[in-house]
Image (cartoon, rainbow, N blue to C red; front, side, top):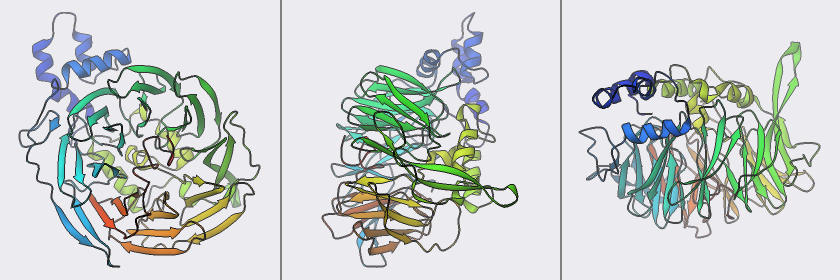
Amino acid sequence: MVRNRLIPRTLALALGVAFCVGLALLPGDDARADVIAGLVEPESQELAEQMYVDEMLPASPAQVSLEEGGGEGLVPDAAVKAEPYETDNGFKGWKVHVPDGKPLATPAVADGIVYVGGGFGTYDFYAFDADDGDLVWQYHVGDDGPTAAIVHRGRVAFNTESCILYVLDAEKGNKIWSQWLGDPLMAQPAAAGDKIYITYPGGDGRHHLTCRMLENGGEVWNQPLVGEVITAPVINGGSVFCSTLEGTVYHFDADDGELKWKDQKLATSAPWVAGDEVYVSKRVEVAGEEGAVEQYEGIAGLGRGSGGQINEELYAYGKADYLAHDTESEYAAEQLELDASVGFGAAPPAAKLGQATGNLGVGTVSGVWAYQGSRPVVKGNRSYNAMGDAVRAVDVESGEVVWEKEYEQGEARGGRALTPPSLAGDDLYFGSTDGDVICVRSGDGKELWRFNVGEPIRFQPAVVGGKVFVGTDYGNIFCVDVQDRSADGWAMWGGNAAHNGWEE
């Protein structure tokens, strides 16, 4: 819902629509007015969606003026500029500072254009030229917090933290369609074929996974979930997989939504699907000294058909202090500030943050929005992932750790030291909270190069056409030519719009 970041969200919404509601109400519309003003919950998802369309957004605006405020649409004569950039090891590229300086998600790169939202709490989505960073177009959204984007079949799709799924024309930026879904939306959409998939909190107290047509938003099917999904749904081979905040893993048919299986696995990452197996990171609680509970984590392999766990002992099993609820670090304080900036003095019940706190150690909406966990990437018989400050390659047939590299963390900022890996060609690419971008050889873990951008990186890099693209916690996008044409194939978070690497 539209809200002023300096006042509570319900009050901001009431102020934003009070004038139009005051003029438009007819006898018998009092209940409708209360819902629009955020005073009560709508009786149905359909009513909420229709009221949002009727009362909140202008009808297909073409352009908006940021100086005049309000509305949504393409921004003419936007002033975001790129500047040349050179790394400390001699790589060259460009850098763009996005206004507001908020944390940025993984950029999406397709057909020579880089797509990125302005970050949690912001209202703009950007498209930049991949070669020089020049602004191609800028779209001002009707709600705050654009997620990481996906690009598929000439469309770029993303949702805002507060409420709306957008599908835009990837080349020109004009809106194809948008849909109010629910508040908050903390995961990314996914797409495959002619369909798009996204989760939202419903008016029935449950979360829902909805499948819609990519071109017009028509709903194909809808299935309930126990909570929000971790990072994004994952699509592979005619199926949709997802892990929820409290650790349940689901498998649905992608075409008709039939539930194949679901099981509580204490999963701490989105799934990765490889052939007949589904891989997730999994939390384990171990009793410590004097009754203390210690957190451990490892990789679980699940049968695609049944969901049964294949490996009795978790792969890459180790201590996972980062899964304990963090309330004292610099990063935890930043998350609280971000939540407060959009009116979350306390998270709404619909967020179900208790699930995230208990299973993932995350207790804020912005924290869940940015959470990616220890998600593995699997290619051939190798699984690669980052757990805390260590990167591991594991043989998924034997469970043997093939190689392991520890990352020497500098200033302890809180959160995870390393992003999940991006696998492009034969190499792995990571970002770090110290601002390092690191490339290691997947075969033996040898470090090939690294450079430092001077700002924390929380989201995995995109790697396309010999260039590495990263967003930082301080609102900067970096594009660096690493002089290696094999550095290609990881175009957005999770690799592609289906979030499962190289296959749709």
